[in-house]
Image (cartoon, rainbow, N blue to C red):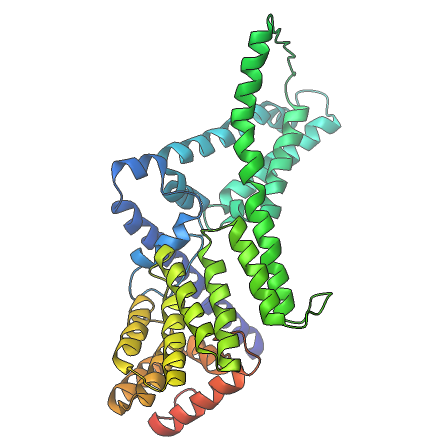
Length: 393
């Protein structure tokens, strides 16, 4: 019985935390919408723009730091494609459900013969209804497997509802044929050219990740160099992907630390800077660039602590409820010879949510994808505990 009560309390606690996260996403989206001119309200900020804009508009005390999705398809579509795009999305689904409703009503009222087609329509109807309702609290539309399943339901419903009227369009002259072909090329041409580009880029990204983690089928003689080449190919196909830029910066940083190569650290700095131009409010990018600059200055023999600390402080300001970021800040302040400020930041990290602080203590987020990052981070924590307190044990 005690175990059951404990598990129930844990589930309720997790549910409350999840609800708090959702509210954080939606409040950030509301602030984002309130700060937009009429043009963006109508047509939106562009696909996948929500993640890049969120950290600028999220509430400072929110438990959410970085978010790619708002966990509400309708809110996210409003931000990304505006009122017009959202209206088209909703209208599409209303039309699909309205077309299927007569068959659903016939089955419910048992007013006609029951066929396999009727059963398929009813199943697809309620499957789509579940998809649309769940879209209020999640990002189903942005999960390819779920979105493709929903469109499969649409196809099944279209196949088994109504009658398909076939109309033949007669092209009376060669001029008409040329015009129709030109219009089709104008519409389909950009899709043929640009849709495969992100997919090709993602293949190169996964190749780079496989090389670095030792999962690639072919083991290159110089894994970092091979991974860098793959990421450059990824950016060739998707040149505005800030996550790829940051990942490439991480590879250069890892190699620069291992080989004590200042040039690699300069290159890492440059790629993080490019990523921040596209995603200026990412606390993770800000913090990693600060660490790269600190490592580079150490190799050069002169460390200027003020600009490094200012960068990390900016990262903390963007995500003040993240204990990991505060622990990094405390460690850097300690190295800079500012024990009072370090103690304050360590106490602030310990005062964060117990579960989050425990995770930050036990799981070292990889700074440069190095294998010894966890051991290095745990050693840092033990030193901070010994010096500034025993919280988190």
